[in-house]
Length: 323
Image 1 (tube, rainbow, N blue to C red):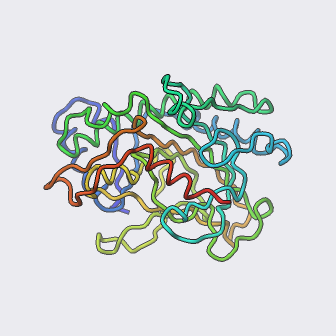
Image 2 (image 1 turned 45 degrees about the vertical axis):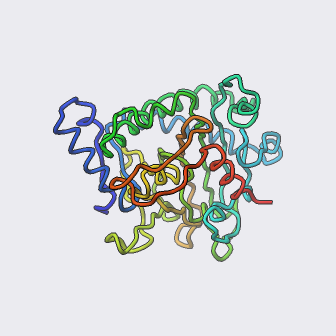
Image 3 (image 1 turned 180 degrees about the horizontal axis):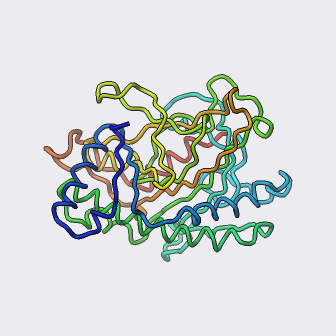
């Protein structure tokens, strides 16, 4: 899918001005259509990503009554059971609850403001029954943060801005991380009409870094026919690449020059009813209460009113909460 190109971070990191400029131009073109990229040259090995899945599997395979001890609502730190989320609600699409389970962690280093710390920097919980999970996930999170800041510097260059245009707002980032488990129908049941592993939506924040597994009930992205796409399409896959998309706040920041990447994850299919997939989803966000105001024309195309990042994100998390 040429509208979703593969960007190698190697030339960007090389310091060569022509290579860096070429990467920036390609990023600008891609994010103006589907809002997605595949990114290679990120330096995170397949073994590292598989180790996260293996340690998470030790938790997901536990009996439900054990996992229930760690149950949380959307925005919490712990286990999200099947039926806890309906991501389609965020865009106003009425769907049955998403067919997945998640282990979720988030930023946990308090900044000293009780009101902010209470929601955005709560302590993470770690299951005693999967004792290796904490160390493996924290190592992965450190790697993702470095890549995310590198991508934000590349995105700033793609807009012709100073490279710290976005990263000056990520010293106390309110990131989140979901390990999403998509089991087969013997675990989640037969899908209802219009039900997905994750319903159609756009992400809410700045940039998302996804490591996924390919499957028949896998990721689809929406590329508007006006931009040369054909609506819903299976996302391109490269086992070595991270799938990167921008969210609503980044789209607003650019005045809709770039698209917030609309996507969904299909339910188990009749062709592969017991397909079992796991995705590692790193949501990188800006500092709490960052004011997100659109770049002026001619870069920006829509003059949105400025928004408070924390208020916007909290409202979206509340919107996808079932019950």
